[in-house]
Image (tube, rainbow, N blue to C red; front, side, top):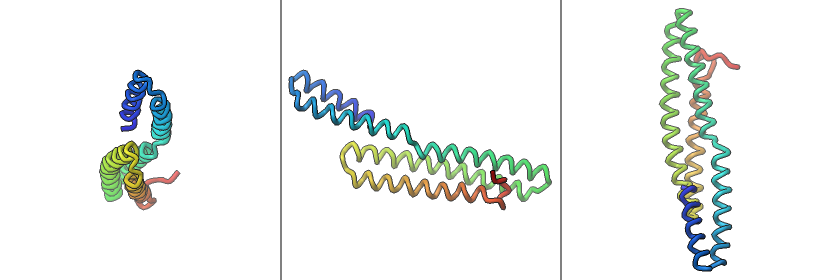
Length: 149
């Protein structure tokens, strides 16, 4: 959404320059730079990707816990680890879908300068992240058979 906004602003700037409307071209230049900074910020800090990476580590630990339980004939423990792995996997899918949709709404709201809508979408992203973090923490509890680092 931000990339599309930048493309559109650049087209508007080219049109303004062709029409020798330099005041508009200057204003558009400022808006382009602001949008490019916003895009760089969005790309440089991606908490959603960090949480998904953390989920991958949790899934690996659960796999190790499951295999260790199997090796020790602890089939209840293996079943718990398998169930938690499925829970984490499903939570990850839901989290990624919800965050993707909310990020799109936030980006569209920012582009349209509807900052209350952007704030609401940001809140939804933060709530989804909080819930996903809680699930990851629960899945790693020592009683789940996952060794803490």
